Image 1 (cartoon, helix red, strand yellow):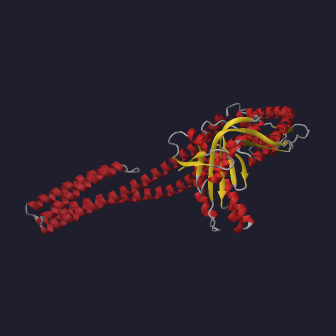
Image 2 (image 1 turned 180 degrees about the vertical axis):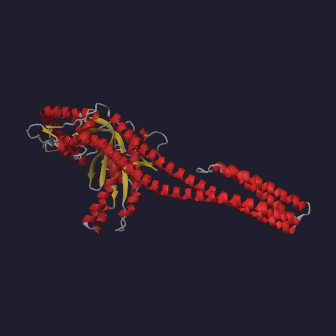
Length: 523
């Protein structure tokens, strides 16, 4: 294993060029000025945002002023239009009074008299309304109108008196000679008033058009200047932040690539200035500590190689030994090197049917099926904490309570056997799918004192167990029927009550055993 850290080249400190930071040349003096302001970064940002807000506020005020000026002229035009309309209405009221009087004198119908009164009231009201909104200089127009209207009303009263006395012809003559003539005086004044108003309307429209163009151009120019100022101010504030960030990023990139000689300079007198100083100090520290790091790296490399070798040994051991035995060996368990007497529960699992299956299957298929079966059986052994001693052809030898103590070793052995028989029901479906062979297993479990330790020659040692109970477990497995689990009397004695159900299997004379053995069947 080689070092992953490359030593940096020996060269003088590198300073990031100030001209290569991307700041537009036109803005550089302003950016430098803002950067050198001795203030916190948030203060500078707040000042920039405040400046932009002032520009936007000024733009809004100018816009409101323009709108207000245009609104005032629109209101003046509307008032002049209303003034002209009122003058027309007054003119119509005077003219209609004369016509109503003529119809009243000719027909004698009182309806026309009522209309005369209504028209007179409307005329009087229009004089007051128009005077209140009048625009422009009109002299004593409204006083003259009221004086003439009073003479007009007096003439009307004389005509009405003549008509009431029955002198119709006199009343008609008085109307023509006095009332009709007075109405023409009012009409002349109103026509002159209307003409003056129309001239004011025309002048106001011309003035409105000219002022509107001026205000529009002024608003557009101020808007452009405000927008340009806001963009420029925003760009200055942005580059005040972007420039040191880019330089610091460049310095960190060189550090990440193993170059500890890079130094940076920023004119900022804020947090970025302090940050650049810290980056430079970090580069100096890293450059000074690099040699020490190399020494530590070499030492670490040796330790890693040692650990890798140990992991490789562990992986190799786990291929042949149970996890508990492998872990004990790796941890340096002294007990594994000693031969000793221990009470263990030994289980033999005798598999039937693979011999017949081998005669009907290709070698590759046979090996795949057997390995699949043994893998599942081995997983069950390890799940229950058993130590897999060895594979004996298509049989397994397992023991419990070593190398780690297991007070419930008999119970573990029986539960393992039950789990194997249950798993075999599922495995049998796959194993017999290609050949008409039924795969079964007989299990024998015996508990007692045996000798456990390393046996063999200096060239090859096996960690295993020996003794009568090993032979007895093997004989029980051989004598067990398909799917049957036979246990010894000692094994039964160590099982807690109610854990499993058992039934007597009688006394049997087993090969290699001098006396009959009382057996029990796990049901």
